[in-house]
Structures are given as C-alpha cells and as structure tokens.
Length: 212
Image 1 (cartoon, rainbow, N blue to C red):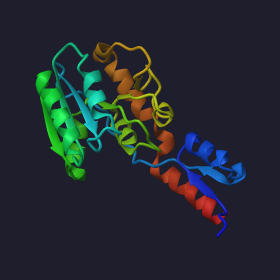
Image 2: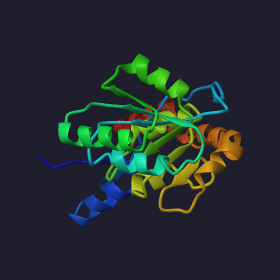
Image 3: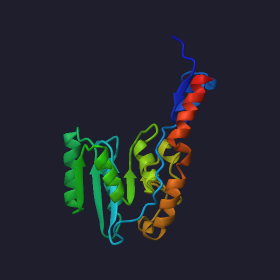
C-alpha cells in the first residue's frame, strides 16, 4: 500500500528516507513530547556531584564510555546506573570498571516510573554516550527536570544539547569541574531549551497532520 505521509523524529531520519527515494514533501518531523516541569532544580548536596546513566546497560548505550567520562571529575561524586541488564557480559565489564576505579555507585537495574522520578530528583548531571538514537526520551526527561546533560556527539543529541548552554557534547572541549560554578545557569537553560517539546504542542502537531 502507498503511504501518504511519513513521520520522523529528526533531520537525520528524514535524510535517510530521502536517500532511499521518499518524496521530501511527504516527510514530517514531529519530535517526542514531554511534560514540562514547573519546579526549578536545586542540587541536593553541594559537596558531592551525582551523575546518572539511564537506559539499557549495553554497548550501544555506551554505559562504560559514560563511566570513563565521569571518572575525569576530580572531586567527590556518586553514579547511578538505571536500566535493564540483558547483556550479562557487558554488565560484568561495567561492574569490574566501577570496582577498579573505586567509584561510589548504585546499580538499580530495571526500574519503574516512581523510581526513575526519584533518581532524577537526586541527579545533578545526566551522562549518555549512546551510539544511535532517534529522539532520546531520557535526555528530554532530564532537561525537563532542569538536569544538564553530557552527551555523545550523535545527531539526536546535538539537536537537543548545546555545549555550554544546557550541557556539553563530549567531543567538544569542556572542563567537567565547571559544572560546579555554572550549574544554576545550565540547569535553568536545560528547562528552557525544551519548551518546544511540550507534550500539548506535539499533540497539536499530530492533530493538524491527521486532520489536514
């Protein structure tokens, strides 16, 4: 059957469709939506930076790479790792790395929405080294809480994270300790940067497309 319209999450996916012959006029970019939080993020412990890695624990998500980035932080910190652990070999590598570097951590495994909300409430910085994403909900969710994000240089992350504004792209030079002095500004910008992804606006975009 022929397709009247295509919906993709970002420019990268749109270009992939164009490259296989899909008419550009039939492609609509509509991002994932998120509920925008109204409260402002406040660090729970000024003496300790809490980093979180949220998502499936495997090579594609780059969890070990994220640990390596975080380990460059020279002051007291703690790491949360939350997500399904289906790749046991990779999981063991992660645990060995945390032990070898003597990093304080909690590995949560797969958790529900209430636990995720609690993790976000305790998180100062989200780190993601994912190697491929469409529109990463975990990044949207973190930003909605006012949590700055350190992210790998894939297109999906670059669409959301602007280095020095609401976080940093890993390939860009940055001093990870700078988060201490810049935190309030980065956190405020994080929330402001995703206003366009408000779930009500995204719903309106779908409604307009469907109703013509």
